[in-house]
Structures are given as structure tokens and as C-alpha cells.
Image 1 (spheres, one colour):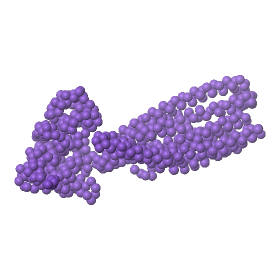
Image 2 (image 1 turned 180 degrees about the vertical axis):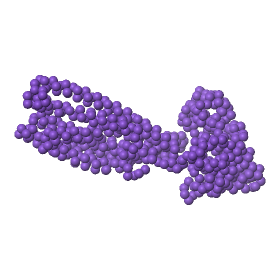
Image 3 (image 1 turned 90 degrees about the vertical axis):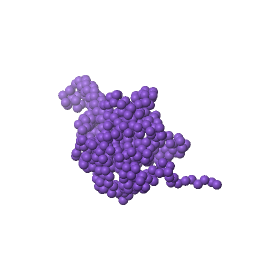
Image 4 (image 1 turned 135 degrees about the vertical axis):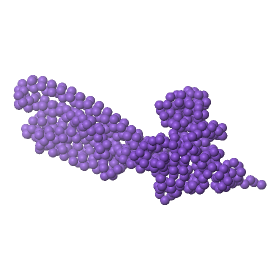
Length: 596
């Protein structure tokens, strides 16, 4: 993002597709205000007709009979009021629909762009903060376009049209009417510069509160289990108070604007009233012209008292616009390669791979391993050894720092992300189910699957029996994140989802780490079926779940330290053998002293 660009120019650059509608809405606003300013002029003309009669302005235009003049005035008045109403409807419909369209497109574009960003972007930001941008900030811009844009245009139109009429009627008095405007504009710009950072702070505090609420609602079970409701209420209260204080500081400044502007306006109105009256008494201007000037001075100056509210709305919207457009301007570092991955057997090579989440703190160092097509390859090691990081690199959630990863001989950085990720199915220990039905979640990777295909996949995953016992079977709602199901049930639905997608490469990331023994046995039976003749990468803490793998790699601090079959590694009597002894009860790594 270019920091020198102002939010309004950034929004105009974004709104290329809407510019014709913006021009049309602007035209309707201007025409509505032009016809809205006509009645004071008509009043002046009417006074001129009554006072001057055959010497009135209309008489000089050829309508000599006073009655004829009044009839003409009535017709013109009727037409003007109709046109004013027509254009009021036109600008109202156009601006509001435009606001809704831009709001919709910004939210969709923002979300769509968000999906292209790297996993690192999400890991460094809160869900609540991103939700605040896509909802609160987009809605704030919509509120400005809905009414504020029209208000600003109509004030500008009023100044221009009234200025033309004043300098035509009485140039010697016109400057008095316009005398307050430079002060008002100067004050408005000063106000804008001072209020802008305060509203930026308001938007930041709003995002912080949104983040707290989102985190707490997601973690409500933990809050209840630790009985920390009071503490969390205090955190929300503190965050909300900070938001309240940020708003208070903005309101304190913005509320002072209108009263000060009224005082400035009063001087211009009083000067016009007196000076114009003196000229009328001296016969230097017509009574009708004086009436027009008095009415128009009020129409000119009093709307400026709302300028503070309009700027207030504008500043809130521009603070939000910057946040939304900053998101859209964020560049993804993980981008598509030029090649599509076609036929996939599943041969994968990690060649001298190095990676660090934070520069200078490597997680993977000079790692090389081979995953052979059609075989099951296990990756084991202590927590923090880099097992899950390898999977993130394979799926290009992150790019390797050094070395390369190839699949079927293609460097994965040269492949499109879609073709790469379609080829690799992931069953994670952290199962995520979307709020919806069981069927929706199983068909997530293949939405056009038939019910027979869904049932077949569920049977392979040993999920069918418990699904049909649910109140609505495959149409049962699983709840947000699948919380209406047990951990084992969620895991089996996740496996059914992978079975239905039928990827050539299957990754099992601790797929049985958080389930009971009975569920683990059921899942293991499922995995034996779906991994047969399929390239499978199994990451596990429980070595019993991968003892039949064709090849097992043992990681320690981001490096391969052992490799071989289960029997080979046990005989090697190294790290794997030590872990195996601990998990089978042959060795106890530590003990709790007992009191004598």
C-alpha cells in the first residue's frame, strides 16, 4: 500500500466498475438541490409581481398581466416541486443501492482475497480482528455512502448556485453572505485533521473488542470449566471501556464543531440581513431580490451547521475504508505456479529442506526424505521435532527456506496451488466440521456426490452406524465446529470426507491421538482399508498406529536421525526404540517418589 494515498482516492480507484452509477447518483443529488433552491427564488419573483406588477421581472419577459404572471408562477412552482421530488427519489434509490452494492462487493472481495493469503497471515492475526474489518468497517463505509455522500454534494451545490445568484443580484452584499464560508472550510479541514486519528483509534478499539468477544465465545467451554466467567467479564468490560473512551475523545471534539460553526454563520446572516435591507430601503435593489437574498442566505449557511456531522460520518468511513483496502492491498507470498499437476502416483521427495517460521530460528534443517508411491511412510518424533511443519510445507501453506520438495518430479513451487492441494488429502488431529449437516461435511471436498457415495464413504470410515442413530441421520446438524458430536465421531466424519474426495496422497496428522481405544481401533480398521495401494504419510505419537508402515522416519530438532521399518528401528536401539519401550511399558522415563 502506498501510505501517501488518501482513503477517498483509494476508494475511487477500487470503484472502477461503479463509476457510472456514482456519476448518475451525483447528478441526481445536484439536480435535486438545484430544484430545492428554486422555491425561495419563486417567492422573490412572486413578491416582485405583487409589488411591481406591470414592471416586474416576468412583465419584462413578456407576461404583462399580473394574473397571468401568477398563473405562470403556479405552474412553474408545481413543475419544480415535482422535479425536486423525482430527483430526491432518484438519488435516494441510486445512492442506497450503490452503498449496498459496494458493501457487498467489498465484503466478498475482502473475504475472497483473505483466502489467498498465507497461513502465516492468519496465525499472526485474530479471527475477531479480521471479522471486524469484513463486517464493522464495511458497514461503516456503507452508512456514509447511504447518506453522507449526498449531504456533502448538496452542500457544495448550494454554495455554487447561491453564489452565482448572489453575485448576479447584489455583488456588493454577496461577499457578506459568503464571508463565513472560508472560516467554515478552514475550520472543517482543521477539524478533519484532528479528528481522523481519533476515529482510527475508535476502529482499532472496535476490532480489539470484537477479537475478545470472538475468542471468548469460541472458548466458552474452557471458561466455564475453569469458572473464569467473572475474569472474562472484566476483560470484556475493560476492552469495551477502552472503546468507549476512544469514542468519547472523538465525540468531545466532533460535538464542538457545530456550535462554533453556528456562531460564524450568524455573523454572515446578520450582515446580509442588515446590508441587504439598507439597499432595499434605498431602492438600490428590488424588494423581491432582497427577499430572495434573505431566504437563500439561510439556505446557504444553515446546512453548513450539519457539516460537522457529515465530516464525523466521513471520518469514521474513511478510517474503515483504509482498514478494508489495506486488507485488499496485502500481497500473498505463496502464489500459484504455472503448471497443473496431472497424473499423480504419489512419489514425493524432500531434498535438503530448510525452514524457519522466524528468521534465525530454524525448525527444519537440511532434511531429506523420500515418500514412495503406493506405500505408507510414517514420520515420528518428539513434540516440536518438525513433523507437522513438513506437512505444511508439502501443502505450501509455507514455502521452504532452502532446498526443494518435489512431487512426481515437479518442484511444488511450479504447480498451481489448487492442483497440488487436490492431490493431497489431509486428516488432521484438529478436525474442523462446518456448521451444517453430517452429509454437508462429508461431501465438503466433493459437493456433487450422491447419497450412495456418501454412505459408502461413511461405512469405510466406520461412521455409518452412529450416523443413522442420530435424530436426522445424515441430515443431522453437527453444530459449530461439530460440537454436537464426540471427538471420535468428528474424526470418523473427517476420514469419510477424505475417503469421498479420494486423493492420490493421504496425510494422517495424528489422526488417532485424541480418541479412546475403541474409537482408535475402529479408525485403524478404516485406515487399513483406505491406505491400501495409496501413498500415505502418517504422522504419529503413538508408534503402535504406524508400526506396519513401509518406512518410518524419526525426526529430532528438524532433522532425520533414523529411518527404516519398525523392526529395523527397534533393533537399532536409538530414539525410536526408546519411544517404543516407553509406550509399551518396557521403560519408564520418570517416576513420582512415594512417601515412606
